[in-house]
Amino acid sequence: MRSSVLSLLCIALLLTGCSSDPAAPANPPESSSTSASASAEPQSSLPRYTLVWIRTGPKSGTLSDEEKRELFGGHFANMERLAQERKLLLAGPFGKQRHQSDLRGLFVLDTTDGDEARAWASTDPTAQAGVFVLEYQDLATDMPLAAMLEEELARLETKRAAGEAPAPGDGVRGWALLTAEHGDLARRELGPLASRTGGVLLLGRLDGTRAFAILDASDLEMARERFAPQLANLGTCTLDEWYASDQLALMVR
Image 1 (cartoon, rainbow, N blue to C red):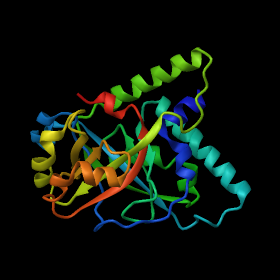
Image 2 (cartoon, rainbow, N blue to C red):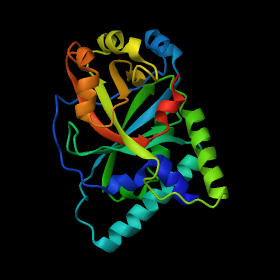
Image 3 (cartoon, rainbow, N blue to C red):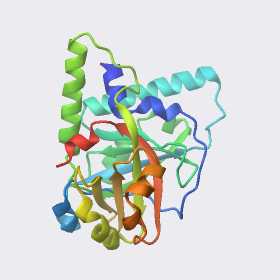
Image 4 (spheres, rainbow, N blue to C red):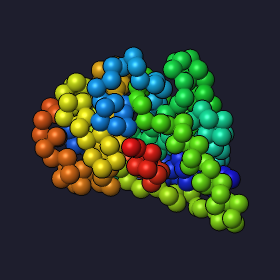
């Protein structure tokens, strides 16, 4: 089962190279909707979660190969446990093109309680060792994250029962993460596209202010081309390469 869950969470990709490619002024992302109507909903009416930013820590690059194998083995196992306990709903690593070089990945945890989120995330061995540092923000989104996890776990369990053993990284593709400083402006521009066909898979709020979106674009060049009219009107924003389950678009109406 481990390889299935690792595929879902894309955690093998956290070990890929992390060269930076700044794109625009830095602003952390936020997420919040799966349909065009959701973009108009007030923050208080949206389901809330905790978004955890995974950043390079002070001990990164200082470990021996043996220490890295041990720590990342524990990192992967801990992510699997949290997913099986339905605490970790979504995760994935950043690609090479990202607006801050120390961004490594993100978690979405199924809690709004800051202390609880920290208790769950702090069980990660790489964070405990200082390889990664974690930052926390409130995330409001109506994307059906819990249902998405259940469906993906069920799909992968069916494959396992049939004797198939997906390797870590299978079922993973690139997406674009967008963060906009002016949340209301971003919702006005991107809200009409908040659907599977429109390509804005998630549109929401971080800490009630900034807008965050997952865009259906496999790389930043495609994102800039597909969403050029909207990006021209968003003001200060960033785009980042990000990897996650290829099933994300199927969860959006």
